[in-house]
Length: 88
Image (cartoon, rainbow, N blue to C red; front, side, top):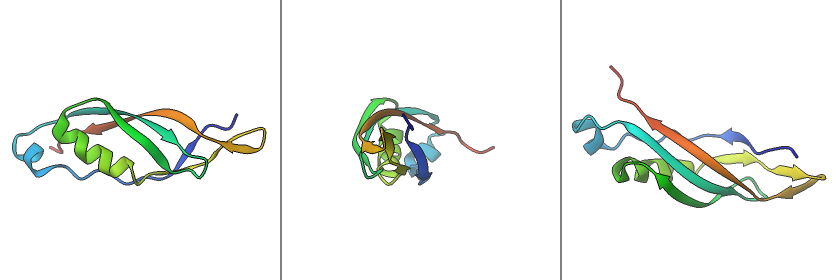
């Protein structure tokens, strides 16, 4: 099995309210990678709701190389971690 490989990544914007409140954290998402490499059925597993919205919006735009099983594209479930860290 050739697992999905990320080919297009969009960095999440840091929410203004999170910047002002110095909020940092990790958002964990679950997604289905479609046979065409698109990110589908994206759902929040854990993380701050303010950061989660930015993570969901960015990850929805990610594209993967389709996963092949016996030469045929298949959907796969994956877990994605997005880390929000303030620059010093």
